[in-house]
Length: 425
Image (cartoon, rainbow, N blue to C red; front, side, top):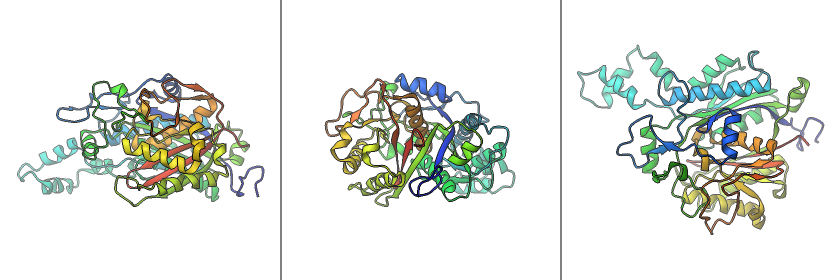
């Protein structure tokens, strides 16, 4: 039975009391929200490394962060540090230690080319090959390089700096990771394992090798001439996603805990739904059943009907197959009513922040509810007639939004959907 501090299933109500975000649009909620609602793109030509010979030469890189070195782990940590600090400051925890665990969505980590070249140079007597790398890596004087490519390194550093409790959890569910981190934080509170959780996600892995891999999958756009026009979710002329970087952090608490300490409540995580899809390493099942199930589970978990959703923050990657699949799945769940629900894709402006996407878009969804403004989907000049959605086109829309469905669908069949609310009632 629902009570003052419990939901429709008698579980603790989970609220948000702090948020932080970094994308190619800027650092912090204020900069990002101003750019997002102005319809400004953060996509630009890559200057961090040479792009000669690459099919895609644009990205949403975050080049304004100060880092120890120019590498994916270093950039990912710098962004995560900034967003966690912002979220904890807003929640009133920074400097006092955090009373719960950290759930961190970590980007894939590996030796980057500059690290490999460093190792190979240490074994010049060997024929250049994989064994040369292994021999150098096995030497005992590479402690920092080993730590750099451990999945849990960023989470451990964050936990140590901000005083979270218990063993930090690092997770990776492809492009659903940010939403999965929030899901894990919600479930820990619901199970009574914690009164507060810190959920963060970060991905700074725009590298030449990353671009090559996604290009080989035919997933990236090659429309390099006008970077700001390249990401076109739900448009007929969409041609692939734009690889980008970003980070977000959210402080979650049980409603009772937040009220007891007088915290400002920014919103409610009402429900989470997830469903794995083992159809293909990159493609989703043609019948859309796993995505449909994830959406339905999220609505069911939240105790809401399709008619309660005021706005959908779409996964909307700008790839031909994904956008069509998302529409078909939404149509299967909402029926014809889907055509009247406002929908937009933040990725039209920030690109696809990969591991961080679900958390970044959750922050933007809460800001949508708080500010009463739906960000636009820019570059929506040539609508796809086969995707007849109410896409908010090119210019922001004033609207009262109280319940949001935020979708995250990842390679390898990882699907996670969040149902977010403006208030407890």
